[in-house]
Length: 294
Image (cartoon, rainbow, N blue to C red; front, side, top):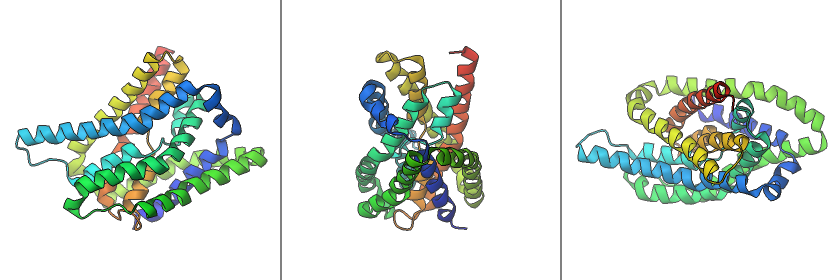
């Protein structure tokens, strides 16, 4: 079974559902409270890819000086950076609500990052594939990537936003259904992908699992540090921790598997492992916030 036929409808549903909860007030938040929005976007769009690239360089350097044969392959490097360059995951809004964060800020950051990464993702990934993709004959068709992201992200978000704008009650009913479908659908995707590539995932889980865990812990820690440095409120801090640490794994998988872009499911392996680790880490964080009664 080709994974792309599963991930495409899942990504479309997630983006449509994001549009259903978007309101004009969410965009006014940029003008009303620019500091947490700008800090969140800087952490997500700039710092997260830098942290990921730094971890890749450190990991490969350590493996080289120890003469290890297990250096990260170019396909996995591309996959790791693809996750790091993706926008915030729509499930981050649910996690922010569970952690008693600022849900309006979470929705704004997810929407803004989805728009900004239309431009930043192709730029960064073009640079990454130019550096490491030649070894495995991987090239990035930037134009096709832009078109695919517009069709799969901008269009469903816009349709959901319009429905919510003119039929808010209908949007609320649809959202109540879709939010129950989203997580089981992602679990289904991860399960099918794991069955298809279980040998590769099991073989690489030691190195990639550690890499993704360190990446998530580093980025969530970065969110907490940024919030502390700029004296944001507790609700804003919890939201930044979740937003900067949670990326749209479904989009990364779509780009990796798409026949129009990379057409290589091995590039999606880091995103699958990231999705598993990410949910465990953020669930632990939500539990911690409840224990500490922040």
